[in-house]
Length: 317
Image: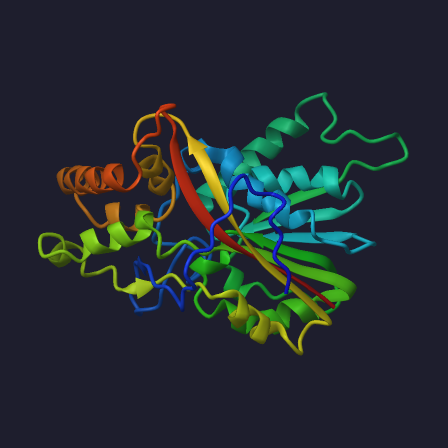
């Protein structure tokens, strides 16, 4: 395993975490559901505009991950948990001759991706800068659950996923199928958050399980599944020919009022708010806001430092 510190502004060494847990809604059958797992229609309703509020910061790990993919011949690329497709569309610059497929089980996210693609297709401006010998790259999006997606063996060159697999229960069980779908020299690359012990998440969980809120949020019992680097190495060892794992802590300098709240509002906070009525959602958010202000005070510059640990894995066949 290697640890790449070159893409950081600052580096910290957080204490190791062991199978951190974060609550999520469950389906009627009691199975966890998230952005990309649990069925084609997720209980969590995603808001592309809120999610993209910090698009640059959210996409930076995506491109740091893509930069470590060394597959030479790339004809077919799949982005699992593509969200609104903004970063997926950018892959056309990285692999201008490849067919690229983005998959997400959120209908609203895929709708946003398809709308953006339709706008580009209607524009006279080329979708990617390339000489006339290059065909326009193929980009498509599919509303499907990661857990039920069944790629044909040896049909792909790159499978990547950015900040999505932690929403997929037992995602390590899917590695064998995904690696079998790769051609020789292909790559499975993914990034998952490793910050579930950070105040942004622990304060949320503590508030949700406090006496005043536990009765109203008791129906949010299941977990987001994330693992440590060594766990991912053991899951992939023997399935892949090489496994490269590293972690990076990004220190985002966020602007505006309550920026950490606005960040989390686009992801981890959503399952809780959807279980509450309008008045309770406001009260819960206000209580969470006050806790976050103490944990993440503004700097003298007026900006707020938000440390975000992420785990990267690149496995090759």
